[in-house]
Length: 76
Image (cartoon, rainbow, N blue to C red; front, side):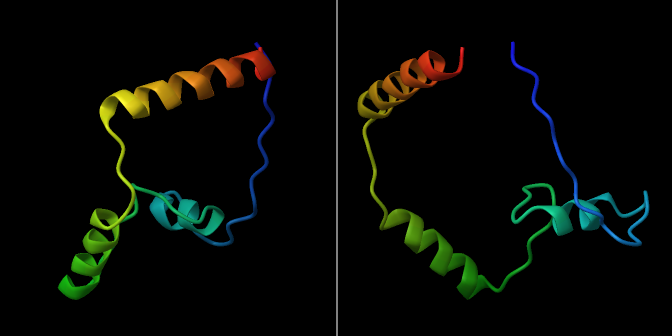
């Protein structure tokens, strides 16, 4: 198994009581940080998802298995 090294940016004065703020400063998106928006913004977001491209479960599983085989061949 390969060893990965991680680098972290300096987060400033955020303390232990503010882990979400510290994490939010180092990454672009975090599912643990609350997101607030208007109802219209949420509806627009849902409509973008619904208008996106959908695949059947069989197609998605086939594409995943191809990706997994390629990934494992390159990395292990």
